[in-house]
Amino acid sequence: MSPHPQLTDPKFADSVGIVTPETLHFDTELTLECNRTLPAFDLVIETYGTLNADKSNAILICHALSGSHHAAGYHSIDDKKPGWWDNMIGPGKPIDTRRYYVVCLNNIGSCHGSTGPTSPNPDSPSGAPYGPDFPLITIKDWVATQALLSDRLGIKVWHAIVGGSMGGMQALQWSVDYPDRLKRCVIIASTPKLSAQNIAFNEVARQSILSDPDFKDGHYLVAGTYPRRGLILARMVGHITYLTEDAMKSKFGRDLKSGKFMYGYDVEFQVESYLRYQGERFSKNFDANTYLLMTKALDYFDPTRDYVDDESLTELEALRQTLAHTKCQYLVVSFTTDWRFAPERSQEIVEALMANDKPVSYVNIDAPHGHDSFLFDIPRYMGAVSSFLNAPFLTQSASQSDHSTRHQDSNSKEVTA
Image (cartoon, rainbow, N blue to C red; front, side, top):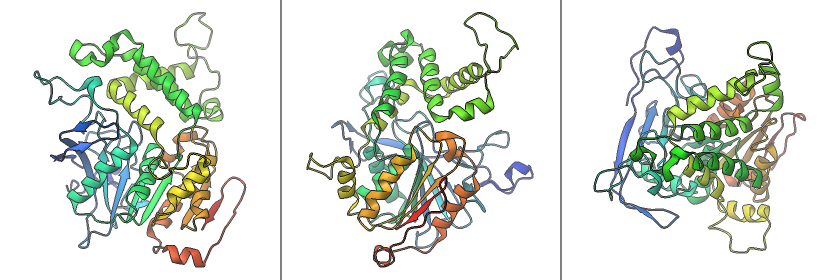
């Protein structure tokens, strides 16, 4: 799909312009890790840039929990906001669409057009949506569908696969499951598996939805209801974990909305107003069943599960063994204030790769935005991604013959193996 011709509005100056999503149907029967089968499925994608003759310039973008296929550009002239990663993707940007053909898809199980809980259930005589009957999905399942998409597009090897947060998990899983199908892997603000604390946050969010009287055991669409309150609470809990105490202090402090105490339970502090606004907006644009299954996909993520049989191994030893057969070059990015997926978790990936003499670059970016930092236009971060994507491909043999480590400063360090 081609972007709209050059438009005069300044917001289109460094944008891919107006883009149109495309829905691809797959008649392929898909057996999932939960041992259930989808008889067929749809994937919604957007593409930016031009695929070259030998199809060697393609980059796959994997989205995070609340993301979608709409990563860059605008859907209409009237759109006020571009795609969720527009500062990363476009002409002259780190993922330069003058040079690369960029594909972003919406994963199955989502509520943005790909087959998911809001899609018609083929086993329902009335054509009712899947609702809670949609099977649980894993990161590995998503990667399997992305491989099928690659086949459909005729892309045998990706120049790079890039993702932040949950998208970074997909990129890591790609490098493990399909080592011959990508040259570069960019893992941003991610983790090799969720900590107990992260699983706990996800469970609190799920329980807020499950306990909403309007949830109706997941059949709210058929019942004509919607668990709005549960979704608002789930998003509020999640949003707190994406930010930092310093960021919230700087933005809101203890400022009162009306300038004085109201001695009640309505909104009084600015931070309360902000969280309620974020929750309300999210509840209008996201499906509750989708939120449940995506948080479970996060909980289940463990790339070592199918590659390690020895239960006596430590987590780091299991990760080392799993990554031993990978073939791509890695860039791992973390952020100093990200306490949801702390830099230490990214460093576990780096250490496992270095133990196997794999080509890996690591940078820990000093940023005040917490986990959400991966969505911000931070020069050092953007420069690291751009340099990695544009540099000559470093083969594994080259990395083994020139093993080096660089430490730049305490807040931003880069390691190349």
